Length: 245
Image (cartoon, rainbow, N blue to C red; front, side):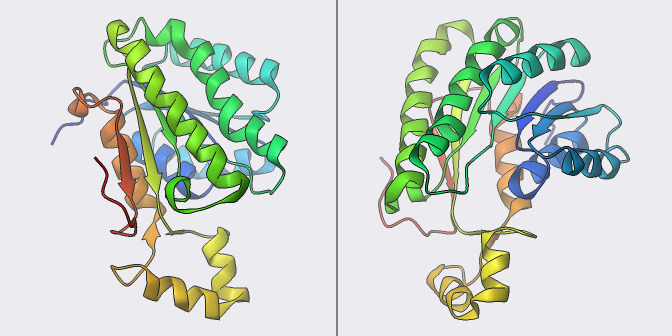
């Protein structure tokens, strides 16, 4: 299948590790040009060195997405570097119980990202905005679940608002995903009992990988999924207890 991504210009927030890193790699493998950001400059530099052999059309920057001015400036600069914006993936999330920090990172960063990218998305014939939510949005509690619910609700509304502009908006909700230095990697080392329980609890008998999530994200973002908008795609190995109507 041709995803029609060759030459497309993509922005990805939180692109240095885990699911975000896999998303950047997958887009590059499909021939897209990608600009990504993350907070830690050293991780951005390391990621760039690893990603450039995959696709030379890649740019990285150190940006704290909670800094609205910095995030808006990065979007504008990336659009200039890439020569436009066709697709955006909002991937950042705050690993903290601080409600305000999580609201600024998980929700407001996506709002700002969408607002600032809109002028370029309106010019694209393959425009897509995608947010990374979580299975926790409909099975969990606390700040993380609440913020992922808010993100899903906002993007659902945005899908209707932007449809007349030819811009698709979707959500991908991963379940338990294993990757280096991620939550489940730490549990495997520090709490093998919790790790073992997670493997049993997941109906496929294992945890998902960042690459498995990334492939779904890239497909949903691509012109190959051109009639998909307003959707929430669960990538959780049948782990959701509810039917999605």
